[in-house]
Amino acid sequence: MLAIDERDDDLYFLPLGGSDEIGMNVNLYGYAGQWLMVDLGITFADDSMPGLDVIVPDIEPIAKHRDRLAGLLLTHGHEDHIGAVPHLWPRLRCPIYCTPFTASLVRRKLDDAGLLGEVDLHEVPLGANFVVGPFEIQLINQTHSIPEPSAVVLRCGAGTVVHTGDWKFDPTPFVGEPTDFEALRAVGDEGVLALIGDSTNVFEPGSTGSEAEVRMALTEIFDQYNGRIAVSCFASNVARLESIALAAAANDRQTALIGRSLWRMHDAARENGYLADAPRFVSESDAGFFPEDKIVLICTGSQGEPRAALSRIADGSHPHITLGEGDVCIYSSRQIPGNERAISRVQNKLAARGVEIFTTEDHPGVHVSGHPARDDLARMYQLVRPRIAVPVHGDARHLREHARLARTCQVPEAVVPSNGSMIRLRAGAAAVVGHIETGALTVDGGRLVPLGSPQIQARRHMLYNGAASVTLVLDKAGKLRADPVVSFHGVAEGVDEEDLEDDAIDALREALGKLSAADRRDDEAVREAARRMVRKVVRADHGKRPVTDVHVVRL
Image (tube, rainbow, N blue to C red; front, side, top):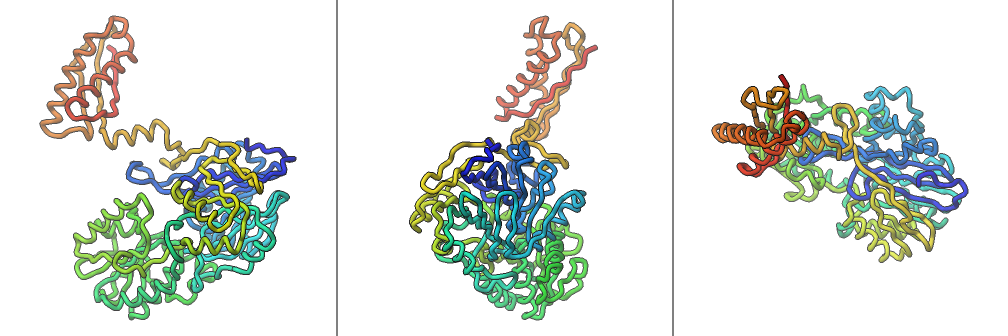
């Protein structure tokens, strides 16, 4: 289906990620036989995915037709929009287009992956106009929680589409350019076929707050404490880094960056002229030499990531930084759905050390979102006036609510996608006209593995059910030549484990005795009978179904 005909006059939109979840954004636009990819992001594993960190979209549907892929356009530098580039670009091998700050981040990722010399990376200026394949592209400056977010205007023979990317309206963004309302209004005057838009905060009433509010709130809060102050935020929120540093300076404190991702973002920002008004930041190795009332620590780990700085501080395993009685940790970020348990674990560990925890529940002003609330979405529709609305960047509830809101804003048509929905963008006949099978991959040991693969399923199964190992020594006729050896992992302990092993050994003798002579000579039949019997015993005694590995040794 991705091999669209060059004579087809319709424009198609196909999300491969980000339209059933918040994160892992990858979108395709097809016209005149060619495709343009917009964003290529990741999401992060949760507690149900043991040993995994990064999840990427399965792009095999377009990789099979990469000769028709004109390019990859990145709207901004957040991980859920660029994080999959080093993992998946080798399957695409297409040119990449992005603005300078995003290009700085992508270059670092490609360099780490050993790909920088292979990629045709086009750095385009803010507000640029350029051509990729059959599309004339215009970038429009917006504000978000990272520098240089752009709305993308795609023009082709079928009409004009506005792909908003992530955005908010902030009259005082501090870092980066304000939203170019005149450009948005001009595109609306020209006539817009469809708007493909951010749905993250569609349930939030009113308008999203300004970074100026956060800067004022942090300045006031810092004045209330005499101990060490730690602030956890998203590393990519460059304006927040500046706000924290200036709030600290107003209270006669220096600011340290604790975590490698913060320094990478800092270096990319300085490289592109951002953070020019912020005081110089202190390294984590030097932060411990400052008096408690003279330092603010900006830490990675606002989402409870186990290897991030804040988690290590909470565990007492950070080599340079400690927090304790009389110190405070401010969460200047929102909880991403699914991370609540991980965040709570870190907060409880900090509290056990005597650290006071301060969140948006204590003072809403310590964080503002980078995404549009309902009034902002309505204003965007008033500016752009599309004939079709296609909500993205959200789960099913977000997308459906966004579609309802678009209709109240007099948008004639709204189509709710899911990942893999092939949507025809034609005025008066917009519709899902097909479906592409989609999925996700995980980065496991440096390799890309399907998230539903047997090895990942087995690992998840072991997390909840434990494992068992059985060794059977048989002669050629299938008679036991030694007692079965059984061991369990994560199923029971102490006396219970010893009793379980004895029960399993007795059951194995019984199971082997019931096999036919032919089956006793068949290693696979022996393994299956043993596996079933061990799982039956464990289920009866402990209610679990362990992953069971059976070794058959023939003498």
